[in-house]
Each structure stands twice: as C-alpha cells, then as structure tokens.
Length: 171
View 1 (cartoon, rainbow, N blue to C red):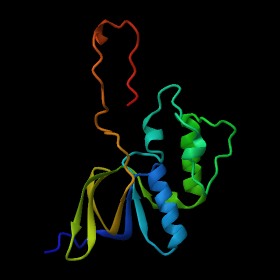
View 2 (view 1 turned 180 degrees about the vertical axis):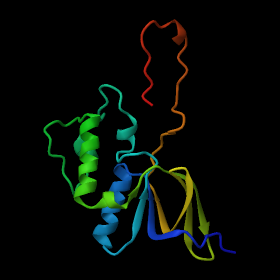
View 3 (view 1 turned 120 degrees about the vertical axis):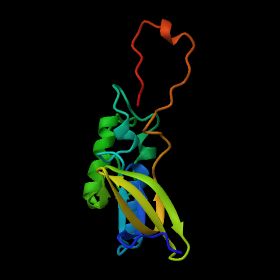
C-alpha cells in the first residue's frame, strides 16, 4: 500500500536545512549530477541555520572559518575567526552565486519523513506558511543540525536566582 499522496510535489532529492550542510549538499548534487531536481526545506525565514538562529552580541565561530567554509567558495575576508553576521552573509552570497537560493522553500517545518517501499520514495510532510504541504523524493538529506529550535537547552545553574547580572540565552 502506498503512503504517497498523489498531490505531492516530486524531486530527486529533498534537502532539509539551509545551513552549511544543506547548501553544501545542494552544490555537490548539482556539480556531480546537473539534471538532478532538488528542493531545500528550511524551517526559518532565512539561509544560515545555526548562524541565523544565534544572533546574540559577539557570536562568532569558535574555530577557524577556513575549516568551515566551502572548498568551492573560499572565505575571502581577512579574519580567521569570523563573526555571525559575516558568516550569514557568506552563506547567503554563496547560495545566490550558485543558484541554490532558488530551490529553497522557507518557513517549511518538516513534520515527518516516511519511506514508501512500494514506490521507493520518501514522503516528507511539511507545515508551510500554516498549511500542510507534501514533498516526495527518491532521497532525503538531513542537514538540519542538532539544535531544538522549539526549546533551547538550558542547563541547571545552582543559585542562578541569586545572580544580579543579566542572563542571556543564545536561543
């Protein structure tokens, strides 16, 4: 029995996430297989993933940006440890340059991804701008990171209530 609805939009690859992983996957897919049809489903309103989520003052990479940037699009700024704003700009510019941005569906919250053995396809159910949307793909690439966007992790700090300073949660 098929679980794939007939009104699903079909692609060869459904990529979940428009951060470093998702954008890199999209580039490599088109580099090696130019005719491959793909879509990127991004829950947020912008490209960037982690770098769009974390916008607190002073956010920056904790290691050399040269280890994070794409080999196909070198980092051209001087600093080796980059701030969040410049990382977001780099990701957006890279997506524009290679046409990846045209494949992104923003505000797309993936609710489920189900394999259908009868059609050898994935059915990805998404909440998109308040409505349910269905995507079908031969492959699914999960570039969604490891952060819980709904509820960030808050460690238990003993006696935090006695601290007189400002406490900022990065999420």
